[in-house]
Image 1 (cartoon, one colour):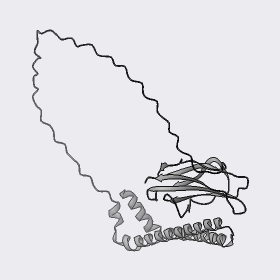
Image 2 (image 1 turned 90 degrees about the vertical axis):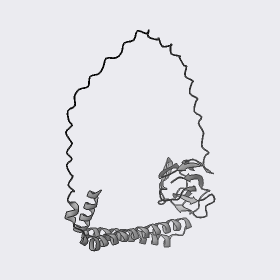
Image 3 (image 1 turned 135 degrees about the vertical axis):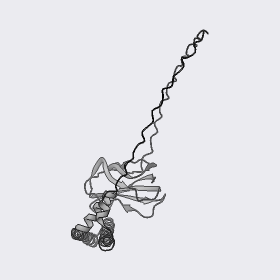
Length: 250
């Protein structure tokens, strides 16, 4: 662990200009993404696309804030922490004391007396009992209830209804219709969600029996959530979505 800390401090001390340049490039990239999302939100006439563009704007602003925080930490370490630290002493390894094992003193061998002899007869052990193992019971397969999907071309196959999930979750299913424009996967918290959040982004390529989205639940509180799959047509309309109830365990 100390080697990693030494490497990071040395990198900040010697390459601070390059780190600032990387932060500036990252900020420019996220500002470009923010402006593109803002332009798309202003120009679109569909409420679903406007909602997705607003979600991308918020994500770009969050990334800009993270990069600015990193730049602030680099500045604090370079100009306030490193001047008071001697890197040479920090890098030098701590000498390990040598341990001298004591020399054992020789001891005289101890004579072991011979085992006593007995004239009694040796008892014969009884025969072992033979047990017949019971046959293991056949495991019972329980089929999880399916998701609420009104149309066959809009379905979530995994996770199933009432499944318990944690960490990164792969959402499998189908999002393919004749009048397909794009699909999105959202999540809402609670038994009756009033607010839905788009997972990652919209997708403009249909999927048949494959991975629709990857959902990172590591930052969410434990509890009941609903997943929703919506397929939008070129006119901005969409049929009833597919809903599935899951339980997040973090």
